Image (cartoon, rainbow, N blue to C red):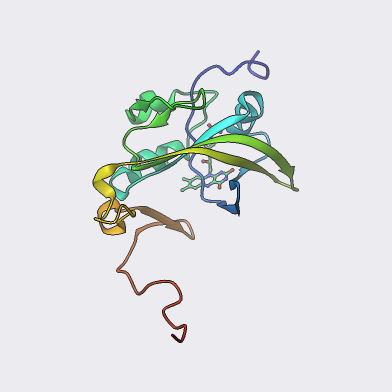
Length: 166
Ligand SMILES: Cc1cc2nc3c(=O)[nH]c(=O)nc-3n(C[C@H](O)[C@H](O)[C@H](O)COP(=O)(O)O)c2cc1C
């Protein structure tokens, strides 16, 4: 029965996400109650968070408009699997940043559930780093989403705390 078995690997598009803590590194993703993705995360107790680039907007839209209990989204999108090192969930090779997460807690709300994951491993494509080893957002060309619209990032405005007096 689908309720008790994870039939296949799945990908869900998520915009409701955030940082919960930094020691340990905790991330949250919020999933509408009853969705296939939430069911299988509760069973496996792990998930990957994969950050897409703007070139894959069509694939992300597919992942966000099809249902994992009905279709195979790896097959539909042609995303390539990339083996995780600490969890038993495939990551996405085409995504420059992949985080392996172990489920810590599920917090129920009215319509959604917040899945809090502990990040146990992060993979970053070397081609997206600057000469100091930090992510270069010009190279990463991250896909942004706001108000039902897909965007790319604009230009950098400054560094954190640039207004602080020396
Ligand atoms: C860009 C985008 C962002 C989305 N963000 C969320 C989200 O944060 N939470 C959620 O529950 N659904 C979100 N959705 C909708 C799910 O991705 C969608 O319901 C999906 O079909 C569920 O897949 P599943 O049936 O395989 O679990 C989003 C869809 C898109 C296209």
